[in-house]
Length: 436
Image (cartoon, rainbow, N blue to C red; front, side, top):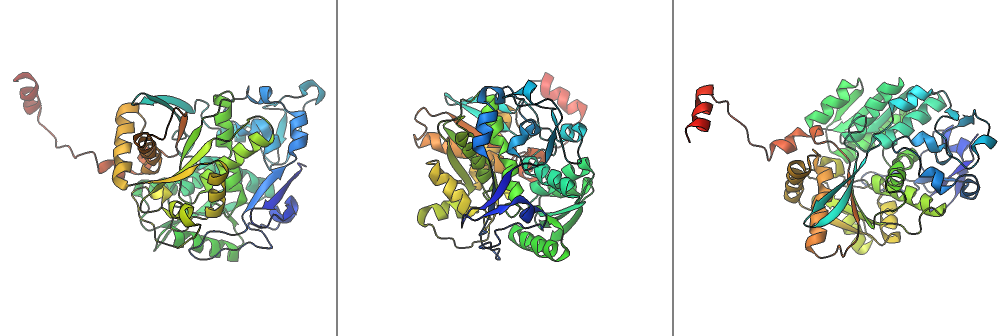
């Protein structure tokens, strides 16, 4: 059995893993609070015996791993595993197949692996930048990092069905990962969910419920029903494994850069769980002594969903309904607001807002200049990167942008800048080309 604990972000109280997991506890039993249209209180984080890990595993061996296969470093995940190789023959090494996870096979692991060539390099106005491209993940979004861990824990606990609220990506991710691992899912979505995301969720065989309201209402509805019916809940931020799962992005960046981390990371931010999870992974790398400094985390928000930007100014939260073309980062009450704020401050980062028009222009530019089709939430990071350069704030720093969702997940956004094409007769086309 692995040695790890749950620790409350707010009050610092720690809990035995069995107390939390076997009783399906999500927030701190002492100070945890979930209120309508409010950020969460008492979010739980998972901590390991880092001193023991440092003695047993080395940075140079970790850097030899293949990105996208998070089970290779089982010592940093809250999953039970059993060694099946002679420990002495693998001393100080990180292994891919020397252990098995409870109730799982190596094939299960392979079925949820991510692309290994996730880091791309481009140039804009003479400035080189990197992209962590999660648009080719199993269900085409970053959310697979969290859904995979939640689903694996469910299988370990003998759970057959998982519920989640989503603007689209978390729902389609959970539905697809559950289908791959033989689990069932029920997804609560807002009524204005992009049609492509709704169809994707349905196609994976999930039970889908269209809530007559926004994402915040879908979140609350899912939480209330799953609590009453005792259904395992994947709600982002609420389930501590959603934060934990997303930390794998930090490790993939670490591996692909061979430990040469970027100075800045631009992160699309709605609920703040992607940023919080990435920070958790970066913090662990520093705790293990494998990196010396933390990259500055830049939270990117849409103007119509800018709760983090507002909170950075005066540390006061006031609920405002969110509305943006970038539905994946549209959240009026960021569930991980306080953790996101803490991560930005500790990395000396900042929060930037961009308009829907800037987001769509960035989406078009990335597609036509770099050949990557990304959804609006992802293009927000490129829009913010452009703004950063225009304000002369880059100053030679190395930047990395997160592209977290495939553009085909929201074709309505693509239609907004791609005109309709009328059919032409062959005769007309010949005259057009040959009679100039």
